[in-house]
Image (tube, rainbow, N blue to C red; front, side, top):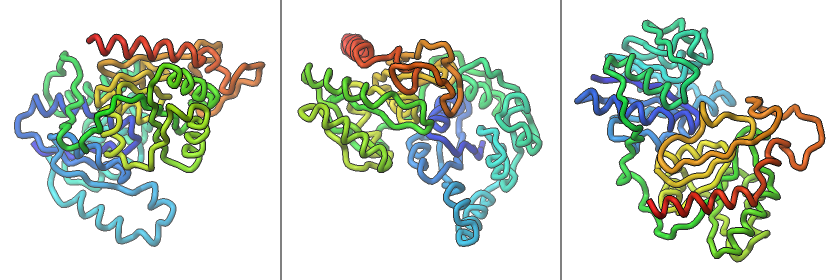
Length: 342
């Protein structure tokens, strides 16, 4: 069976689809999958053995310069139309992913109107599949794939299926990695807490590595490093594969609700993830050695991109005051102790 899988972004969403792909790969001998994904994330699907071809899309970049990227868009359309597929599976459920699906040759399947984020996108599917919002995103993907590709949904533990041989060789050092960057402004754990956490690590002899992906993240990483200069190293700018290699060799990671935390989960790295406005039971890191700390606050989780709380607060965002650095360090120490024993 040949399948075109459309799951373009974000990094966390792409990672969430990997266990479902592993299910399908085991259930359907000879399965070959071509995967449409945003160009900046194209490395991730290539690490899974079921993926025969990655088709990068640059929709975010094209939107900024639509006229001058005409040839790129033509080449992309030609790549999508190059083969006939048994099934075109839109696992994104958005108008943009449905637009891509309509280019392809094959029966289009995806989420039902009540199960998709964009109900209008489902009008383009030949088969619409209901999947409950009450389940974690990983389990929702497993159900979608099983129904769309017609195999029994496995009850086994999840397997992200990454072929570690396709990743850069990890550096054997066993450090702690701080994943401090995220997209929503109020998913950021307060910077002063990161600085205190770095000092806890320094006091107990740990080495901390801090990656970054933007100028703003780089400056924050430098300030965190300045608070504990004997412990913290700000990494050079790395691509996704290089960063995966660093995380794969980490003793543990601690981070906010960000795509890199989900990638750490896919690599089975012990990870402590901090949640303020979002819900770990629906979209949190998923798998072995994954610990969650959720804010305890009157309006958390609010599921809003911007904080609307205007009352008194010890920190901003206010909900993270319930997750001070001392508590996080204690939990991180426990996580490392338990995973070492395991």
